[in-house]
Every structure is written in C-alpha cells, then in structure tokens.
Length: 425
Image (cartoon, rainbow, N blue to C red; front, side):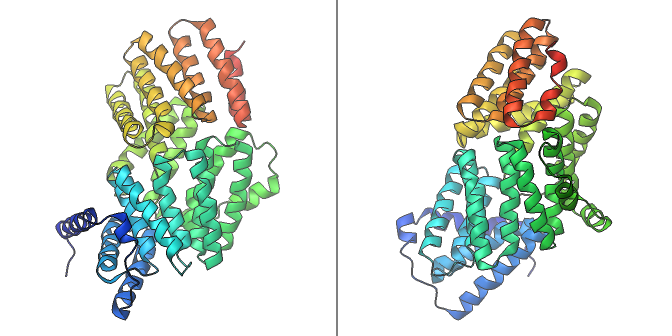
C-alpha cells in the first residue's frame, strides 16, 4: 500500500504515545526478541534505513525508525533496537527540536547498546546519539564520541559509519574552535580513508570544509603532496557531486562562510542567496546537526542587509536570531548563548541601537570566552571592531581588532588574522 504523509504522521504519533506510557527502567527490562519473523523484519528495516540514509532519501527515515521501535516494543529487543532508538533521538532533536525527549532516547539507546551482546551496530548508535548529544552537552567534549564511534565501526567492519564519524568529527572540530592546523591535518587523513573506501558522497561533503580550513590556516605546516593527494577532485567526483541535492546546499554554505570571513560582500550575497533557495526546498535532516549553518547565515544576512539597505536580508537575519535564541533556552546555554548574543548584537547594529549593540557584542565575547569557543571569541571581537569603526569610534575599534587578531592566531587561523593588520595601523 502507498505510504502517505498522513499515514507517516499517524505512525509517528502512535510511537510517541506508546513510549510516553513506558518508563526507561521498564524499557531496559524488556526481553530479547526471539521471533525469527520479527528479527528478519528488523534486519530488513535496518538495511532500508542505511540505504536510504546514505542515498539521501531521508523523508522515510522517521517512519522506518518508528516501525523498528514498535516491533521492539511488541516483541522485545534485537541487536538493531539500540540503533532504532538512536535514530529516533535524531528525529526528535534534529527535526522536531524536542531536545529533552531526543536526549532521553539517546541515553536509552546507549544503555541498550551496552546491554547488547552484539557490537555490529555500535558505530551507528554512537554516531547518531552523538548527533543528538551535541545539542545538549558541551560540544568541545561531546564531539570526541565521534572518534569512539569511528573505532567501534571499524571493529565491526562498518566502514561507511567509520568514515562518517571521522568526517563529522573533523568538521565539528573546526566549528568547535580546535586548532585549525590540526583540523586540516586530520581532514587530510580522513579524506585518504574516504578515497580508499571509494565513498564519493562523503568526499563531496568534506572537500568544501577542508578548502575553507586550509585558506584560514594559510596551509601552514601542511605538506603540499598530502594536500594534493587528499583533496584533488577528479571529473568523476565533480560529476557525481553535481547530481546530489545536498551538494549545492553544502558548497553554497561554505562559500558564503568563506566570503563572510574574508569580507567579500558580493560573493557572500550570491552564495547566501543560493543557500537560502536550496534550504527552502530541502527536506528533513536526520544525519548531523546544522545549527552552524543557521548561525552563520544569520550573521551574513545582517551584514548584507546593512550594506545593501535590504530589509529582506535583515528579516532573514532576525529569523536566524530567533532560532539560536531558542537553542540557547531549550537545548544548551553552553553551546548557544554566545551565538545568540552575537546575532542580537548584529540585529541592534542593523537597527542603529548602538548602545544595546555595544553591550551585546561584549556579552558575546565574554560568553565565547567562558564557554571556550576560541574561534567565536575571535569573530565576536572582529565584528565588534567593524561596529565601532562604522560608528566613528576608530580608536575603540583598534582594541577589538587587536583582540581578534590575537585570538585568530591562537586558533591557528594565520591567514585570516593577517587580513586584520590593516585595521591595526
């Protein structure tokens, strides 16, 4: 029978209602699944989930995870039940923004994984639960679980999840403010691994991130031979990437991020517009957290809106500000407070409330420092520098540009830091 959206919605609702009536302690005492037909059904659904996930057919993923949970509740736990709850936690957190519920089932999935006699799906469970935990727990320490997932996946022979864990760890390390040079070197090794396993999909995802990181670092300390061997795109890879619906979204995001960081307004506007159009047409995402895209899209929108006197872009910035405010209040103060403050500062700058903007820039800087986001501490200082420069307080701007320069150097973004020297004379 045809699975319609109404059937999917009804199924998801039924699963939520069933789980709401059962405590975690009760769930952990469920028996082992012994019905061979149910075990085979779980295996088939697990294969469908993996195939659809890696092929980009993501609209069916919540339905599949829901069905796997329903079978588990009826017939007991199979080796795939922890993965089902891990996927369910991703749906609740990444799609529905229900972070408390998603976090609950992420912890349940990990408990079931520890109790399971099979380790074949450990990589998938650790990867998906980390995707949820990264919203709630301090991101700098939480992303280390991707490395644990990589090791677990390699032990079980799940090379796709192993390379996926390595790739997301590298990209998350960059956004978490880990040393840029170290991130670039790690990405080189990951891309070698991705190429070895011929996973062109992951290569098209990591390449734009790698190219931005290298430009930020200025290729400092990276062997040119490694750089070329790891990142050189072939025509095969370019043709493959062109057919992926997510490719334009990924490349346009990194495009406007790079243009924003290096203050290339027209390119930033072009790539941000492409990103906005593609994002409005994209479907749900259950694969990895996308809050960094929302954050930087908000920042670039306020910049474009001010420079072009375009209300449309300012409204887009405000929408991103609301999204980050929500994350700061419902998911994690540690991970999102500084980002929310910086977007609020940019909004007040755009609305010419300069007193409020100055207070918020300082709040963003202090919050970034307190929560150990070195990269965002550098960025908040830089944006405060532009704010004071544009509002006629040149001497005050020099203080913030100087702080930004020092923090970018500390982060390892040597090439980026050098772009600020003209403001320090």
